[in-house]
Length: 254
Ligand SMILES: [Zn+2]
Ligand SMILES: [Zn+2]
Image (cartoon, rainbow, N blue to C red; front, side, top):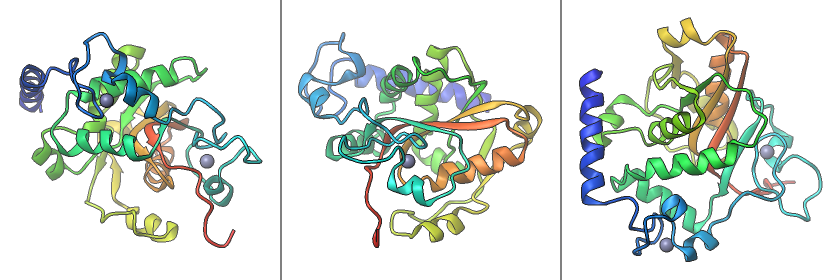
C-alpha cells in the first residue's frame, strides 16, 4: 500500500510536469492563465450548468424554477437510504466532456480542481461530517488506471475542509455491468453485494456521520447501496456530494 502511494505521488508529479494543470482549460483544453479557479476558461465557465438555483431537498438535483414540489421525480418514487445529497453541476454536454476526459484520458491532475469545486459547493452548508469516503472502484480497474479518480477529488476536499479521509473503509468486491441501460429495480439487484465495508471501516465507522463522494449521481443506486451497508455497520448518517448529477427527468408513465 505504501509503495502504491509513493508511486501515485510520483505519477502525479510527472503528469503535473507534462500537463501543468493551471494553463489548460479542463473542459476545452484552450490556454488559460494559471490564476483561474477550477482551471476553466471564461467560455466554459459560463457554459457549465452550476447547481446554484433550486435543488431537490433530498438528492440535490437541480430543479427547474417552474417545477412544483421540493423533491425531484426520482426521489418522489424511491426510498433512498442516504440522508441528503449535494451536487455541483448538472450533467450536460460540457460536464460530460470534462468528466470523461478526467476519467479516461489520464488527466488525474484535474482531481485537485474538482476537489476545489466540491469544497466551494459544500463549505457554506451547515453539515456536520466526521469522515469523507470516496466510492471505490474495483482493484483491477484502479491498477489499470493508476488511480481512483473519485479518491483524488475526495482527498483534495478533505484537505481543504480539514476532515478525515477514509479511502479504505469501503471496497468494491466485484465489477458491475454498465448500469445506464438497466431499470431501477435491475440496478438495485446488480449492485447487491458489489460493495463491502472493510475491517477497518467496521471498526471505525460506528456512530460516525459520513459524506460519500462520487463523480456523477443519476438514480442513486450506487450511493443508496453504499449508504445501506454503512448504516448497517452502525454509521450515524450518510450524506453524499457529487461533482455532477443528472437532470430531473420525468419517468415513463408519470
Ligand atoms: Zn474552456
Ligand atoms: Zn431528488
